[in-house]
Image (cartoon, rainbow, N blue to C red; front, side, top):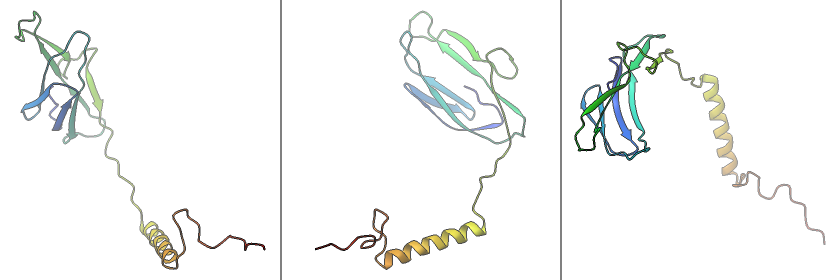
Amino acid sequence: MILAEELRFLGATASNGTVTTPAARVAQWNGDLAVDEQVEIKLHAQIVDAEPNDEICAQGNVFFDSDGDGVNDNARTLIPGPDQMGVDETCFVVTGEHDIPAAGTLGWIVLAVLLAAIGLAQLRGGLTPGGRCPGRGKRPARG
């Protein structure tokens, strides 16, 4: 798999076989597959040079032993890249950066007050693991 220039390669894993990275944007898998067997290869990358609405495409080639003699003697491009537009191309569109919401000043104040209230209740022998105060809500025994 050859990653697009807009991506930084972070690593790869495979469900069987081995994945190597002989170049900065290249990942290679090597392993044995029986008839009807599959392998899942996951590439981990970070977008480093793209704008919202840019399309990023990947290119994948398969080299295989077509006659069973142990030598990879055949090749096919399975995932066309941007210069080989085809029906099976693998592309995605960059949607832009999204901010992760953070608590504002009021949120931090509310959190501090809640934690202080829970701490005070614990110091007074208040809350039990079940969430109730011991000794409260019990009726005296009738005799």
